[in-house]
Structures are given as structure tokens and as C-alpha cells.
Amino acid sequence: MSKVKGIYAATLSVLNDDLSLNLKKTINHAENIIDLGCHGVVFFGSTGQSQLLSISEKIQLINKLSESKHRDKFIIGTGLNSLSDTINLMKISQSNKFNRFLIMPPAYYKYEDKDVISFYSKIIEALPESEIILYNFEKLSGYMFSLNCVEKLVSKFPKQIIGVKDSSYNLYKNLKVSNFSVMPGTEKKLLDGLSYGCSGIITATTNVTASIARNVYDNFINNKDQTQNQKLCEVRSAFDKFNLISALHTYLAKKNNNFKNLLPPLHLLSKDQENELMSILKKLNFDTDAPRAA
Image (cartoon, rainbow, N blue to C red; front, side, top):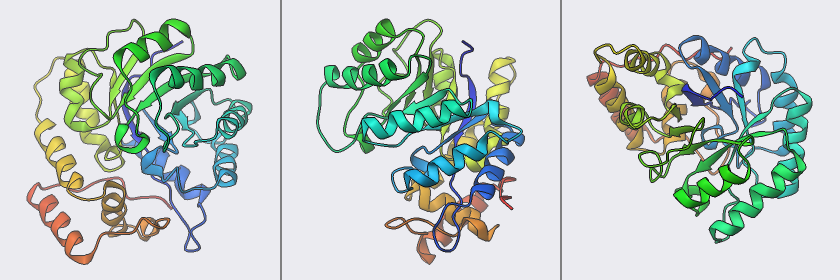
């Protein structure tokens, strides 16, 4: 089992004008940001509108991903509350040779650590060959992983529970598990996380900051001076002022019309918000090299 490490993007989903998922352009965008510096991407994370996409569209995309030149760098997010739907989507992914998954606990209901352990246990009992990255994001799921819960899951399933994406930021400084990937969910925690032994990041804004984030990561690994980290963090802060998905699509849509569509209730930024975002990024002298999705 190779460790997940480096710069990963929670890749965007590209939609047609009828709001159906454009398979080709979604895959092309993911391939492009890998070419620009990401070590890999996660499909159907929060940034990919996972909770809003239909299961049938997810299956269609998974069936096409195996044709990609970067198929070995893909992680599949499930983004489903239903246990049976999660397992079925994972089975389809495995039939296409994808075996690494990012899985958030079901949203909406309140539960305890023991309930979360039961949820992941049932998945692994059904799919013992799977490799799972836990998704710690209390803001969306309503549940925050404790250190104790993660440690219990790893102890129970050392071959299957391989990492955690920490978007609640209560784990990345203190979680110490052998051969286990801890990956904060923002570029602002990249250097800090690496200094604590983290493996990298999985973030939304690496859809536009792939090359800069890779530079920061490589410089840390090679013990070189950091020249881009401040800019990387300031760009992330600029997008964080708004709904992150809306801001990313608004920004990229100015460069490529492919990104103009979002599934309701998500929407592009207002004109005033767009102008504010673009003004901040201009002051930072930031311009992405990742708008292509054709």
C-alpha cells in the first residue's frame, strides 16, 4: 500500500447548459490540473457538487475515468448518505480498477464515535479490499472526528483506513499514526501541516493554484527557501471570503465559459462579489494557468 501524499485537488464538476454532468470536460479539467502540478485529484468531493449530482451521473463518470491517462492518480469521493448507495458506488468504482475512496460520515443526523465506527465497519465488511480516506468536515457533515475515533478505526482496519482529509483542523497537528496520510483541507495549512508530519493537502482551490501549491510542497521536501507560500495563502484567503464553489466557478468562467453552470441552489457570485474577488486577485498578481476544460 503506497501512501497518499502531495498536492491533491477536490476537482470541479463541469456542467452542460441543461445542468447535466459533462463527462469529457470534467475529466479534461482534472487531467489539466494534474499536468500543472497536482499529484492527484478527488472526484465527487464537496467542491465537485457531490451532494447535488445524481448517482447515475457519478456512475457514468466513473465508467469513463478508466480511459484517462491519469487514472492511477484518481480518488473517488462518494458523497452519499445512504450506506447501500455508498457501497454500490464503490463496487462500480472497483470494477473500473479504482480502489481509493474519500468518504464523509452521513450528514444531517447527530451521532457518536461508536456510530461512525459502525458505519465504516459495514463498508469495509462489504468491500475488504478498499482503501478509505476519512473526511473530517464538521461544517458539512455535522460530525467532527476525534483523535480517539480515528485511532480506533485504524487499529481495527489498518489496511483499509489509510488517511484522513482534515477540514475541521482538529487532527492534523496531533494525529500520529504510522503509514497514514493526514491531509488538511486548505493551502493555508500546507507548510504548517508538513512541519507536523502531514502528507500534503486535499483542497478546493488547487483547482486554480496547482502549480504554486506544488512549488511550495516541492520546496519543503527539498529543503529549499519558500518564495510562493505567502501568495498561495493569500489567494486561498481571497476565495474564502465567498462561497468557495461559487467563487471558483465565477473566477474560471471569466476565462472559460465551461465553468459558468452550477447546480441549484448554488450559483455564481453577484457582479459586486465578482468584482471584489477579481480586484483582490489582481492586487496579488495572481492568474491561474488552469482554465482549460474543452
